[in-house]
Length: 60
Image (tube, rainbow, N blue to C red; front, side, top):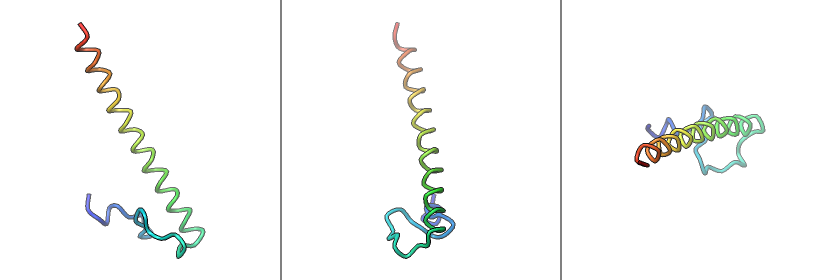
């Protein structure tokens, strides 16, 4: 993932100032952050399941 992939459609990058964004742009940023949070949660779930599977396998 390159730097451009880390930005939303409006060019927001995590940690950037928010005061120069309109309400609609802020909503777009928030929606993108919610999508990213869901993606991270899904990955945590996958890794947690992998760990549980491995723990189960090695418990003899």
